[in-house]
Length: 367
Image 1 (cartoon, rainbow, N blue to C red):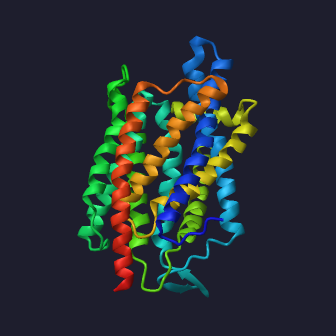
Image 2 (image 1 turned 180 degrees about the vertical axis):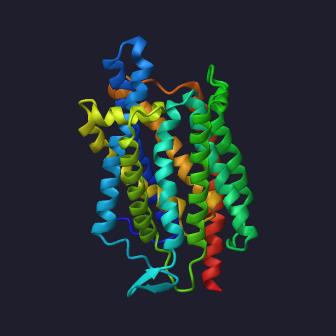
């Protein structure tokens, strides 16, 4: 067993390996259910509409599987007993004061999960959607550091190597735009599309700020309880998703295409819905690694956000390649390989930053 210390480079590598492995599994599952199966059951004329329907169906049932796993572990292992900076007595119970912002973080998570897939139901190319989702997280992570440094919440500085990594990471996610035909940004004229995009970016920005606020405000001697944060956030997210789901399902004669589709896949799912729930279990595992990477101890939001996104980008390319060999999916395009090249350059800069950061942390311990 590879034993590592909290906040060490070894622990960081372990989380990246776990994130990569389960993201790879989930990525292959996504391609199988939303591409391969659609090719098998849909005629060319109905391919696009069937793919959108399968995207929605996979979102719903994989989310159920993922949430069930995450909740089972968080509640079963009692992770929700958060180690707090300060407890307040409410009706005889000691309540962590951090709940006031972790619960909203869970609500933000509940917004991020569906809007991620809803992006693919918009009048927008897949590549443009991917650039917006991946690029926005990288930029937001850097902005979070800038804001919290100014607020004197974050006492660390962002290394120039991290800045260079941001540049190459953005290049990695943007390279697809130059190869994507007919991508465009016409969706900005669509009100529903703008609302979904705005909701996604705003929710993720608030969530990343809250995560780093929690990480950077631990009191002296108070452990950074990422498991506690994860558990409370997931409970909040699940309750929010369940509540909104019930409301949307209860709407009579909805006019929104997305709501109509949502109700349809719940009332008349395909024969694969049970397998989609099982596939969602890997998504639930990914959620653990994702949160723990975003909140990795002793690192800036810029660094942690980059590690998270770059790992998922590499896993995404690996999933495309795996799908090609397993069931004849699409082979990675030239843009994927160019993007991977930029990713590796960004990783190189991050490795230099990691060496500097670990040396800085050792010096702080020695003082």
